[in-house]
Every structure is written in structure tokens, then in C-alpha cells.
Image 1 (cartoon, rainbow, N blue to C red):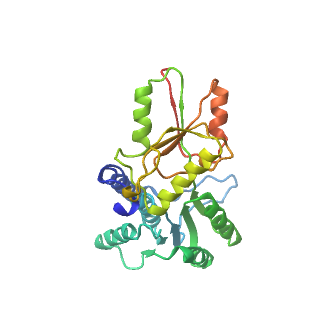
Image 2 (cartoon, rainbow, N blue to C red):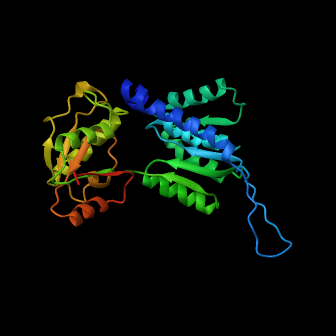
Image 3 (tube, one colour):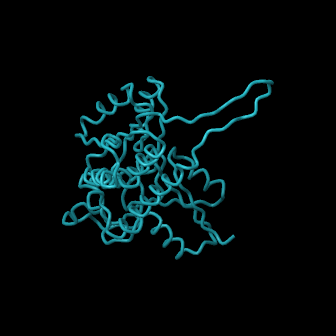
Length: 292
């Protein structure tokens, strides 16, 4: 799991167990797939609903949690009688290769699961070619909103259904009566496995995090907690940083950081808290900490 920048604990107790659970869940749902015979109003008429496989499903999958996204894209499609193609991230090619190898060793016939690795500059063209190919009938994408818009446009032009999981910005609302020690612990454990210092996927990712901090600070955002500089000796690691009161116009406000970077804003009323949380288009999860 060193490809994606996680420690052994996160790999053993989160990423791999969740991927295995998804695989078992997909297998268990096979027996639940069935047609139906709905009641029709007209006499001497009947209706029968049959479920058929799409054919070829395309999964465009990211570097983060590759076993989770890879299994989710491949196992569900295969379990419902489809073949699948995964266009994987160039940052985690070995992880996706391992998924293909596991399915092969389990007895999956050749050609049912196909994995493509490519250079970043070639990825958009390859994705477009595959989406437009008549054999591909459905697309599953996980990644940025900017790329998602382009893929959705191509899918729409080709009248092909697509499923998307785009960027996220998970908020935690901490009320005045909350247990602060428990809240801090839960927020940290819910976002990352404790490690010192936290790793990121690449040096480029570390530079991106540093740029987000610099952009916010240069526009007046306060630094609540952070060392003066990020030591270059840490390689692809980023020391946890807390920013105070970023404004909506700053990149960090609506950017999925993918690193140990958090911003904190204060509020006085519930309506103000909801306004802060909903000012960004992103959102996957949210939490409220209170004793009520």
C-alpha cells in the first residue's frame, strides 16, 4: 500500500477489509437479482420484467483506496453478468494489477476483467475512446468534479448511463456543549489512521497541499497549528496543518485536500453553521457533535 501513501494499519484495518466486504456483498447479491410479473389493468394481458446485463462496463478509478474503488467497480459489474474494463490511476498501478491477479487466481475467465494503465497525458483520450466505443454500455467514474463534467458530457453525447462519485468536503459541526476531547479524537480517527508524520501519495501531492496553505495564508487566513516549514527530509509526508476561518473564495474552502490539512470556522447560531457547511458544492459525509 506504499503506492497510495497509507501506513500498514490503514491498509490492514480499513482499505483491504472494506474491499473484501464489498466483494462478498456483490457475490451475495447475485441470488437476489430476479425479474418480476407486475399486475396490469387490462384483461387478457400480462407483463414480464426481465433483467439483462449491460455487456461491457467501464470503470475509471482513482489512486486513493484503489482496492475499494477497484473492487466496487469490477465486482458489482461481474456479479451481474457483465465484463468490465478498469482504467486505473498511474499512481497506483501495482494495486490494480493485484486486483486483476486475485480475480485471475480465483478462476475468473480471461477477458472478463481488463485493466488499463496509461500515462496521465494519454488518459483523457483513452477514456473518450472507450466511452465512445459501441461495446461499452455503462460508465462508472470516481475522481474530480472537473474531470467528471467532461466524462458526463461525453456520456451524454453517446446516450450512455454513468455513475459518479466526485470530490468531497466532509464537515463536522461542533456544538458548544460537545465533549471537545472526544470530538477531536473522533475527527482524527474518522479522517485518517494516526501516523507520524502522515504520508501522501506523491511529492507532487505534498507540493499541492503546501500551495493550498500558501494561497489561504496569503489572503489572510490564520495558521492555527503548523511548523514554520515542511521539512524536505520527510519526502512524501505532510505535517498536520490547521487553518482558521478560510473564506469561500479560497481554494482550500472547497477543495478535497487528500492530506493532513483541516480548516476551522466558528459560528454562533445553528443557521450560521449550516450556511458555512453548505457554501461549498462538495459533500460526502457530515457529523454533528453535541450532548443533546
